[in-house]
Image (cartoon, rainbow, N blue to C red; front, side, top):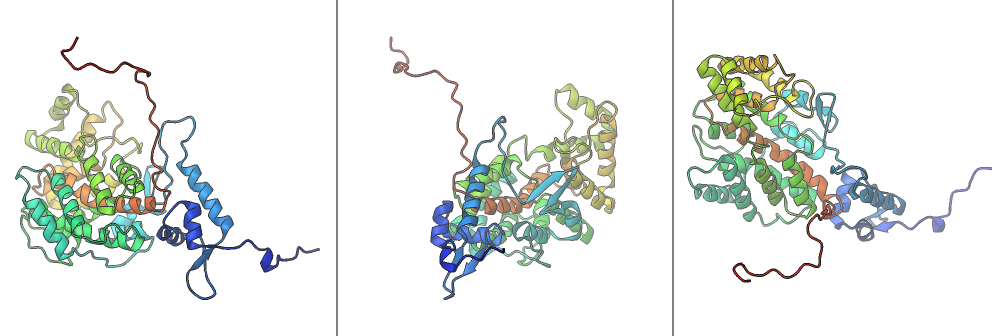
Length: 422
């Protein structure tokens, strides 16, 4: 005998948006972010005013959020569930799509839109609001001349935030609006070298004139655009983790990006391409990688631009960027120097080129400063930081709060005496 359908009165009462937000411990706008990402389904009320939610589905999401935020047993490593980037079998994927192939076929802006929304917006362009750009340029212009590019980008991000009265609105639509204005503001706030700024230009074209005095052609601009797109995201790198911690505390998007920029400036993260840049210049000057590699090892340093803990063979970002650079005659000397470095170290170690070496080939080929690779990395990665901030805004607030393991003196201890007193 077939089970009868429960009468409407017997069915569980559906939850309002407010009730759903209370059960999940989030703001009402976060509930709709869950809906847009397919994590919750909603049903319009008969009168069309608002939505209702299945209580069983809401409770299941709440349990899943608690499991994801709970510390894992048997390991000290933090694990964060994400739908943005997968690194697997020496490849990496943005929302399930091969990232290198995506960067080869689409612009940086289009890849950023894909990362943020899961939709490919053909011909996407980002515009910098006049107020934000003016504030960023004034702030950057007040810095000492020797300030690093990342110093300037951090200051530009903070200044742009002050010009955005909607920065505290963490809804998806508002955050994406901030992202589409912040990225061109960062690029255009850097000191100009050889071009005039025009709104509506692709990010690569705006950024080129801040990196070198050389005039670009279509192929070199395409190489820069590909580099930006390849660097959009790379799972939970140190700077990205900092962004997610800031977003977990509900810092606005500008502040979250500033947190990422702060970590990026560390010598173990963003500065790697600059080290590779200087090494390639020395190889080109001395005519051979052998003595340069020997000097690096003699000084107790690793050879920059080689090896990556997530890839057994060559970094797929390096492969894709090298393929672009092969089409540029100006890049051939630096490409040969990079190959010489790889071949020299391969005599005793199984290390392959990573994206820092490929970036160094690009920056040395076009007369850029050693810090140019870090600038490209920072501007490109801003899109990924925004994607991770958006994802974190949809999670329980302050979930990324590990407990400290205290190993100091046990209380009670006597009150300390000032120095000099007996």
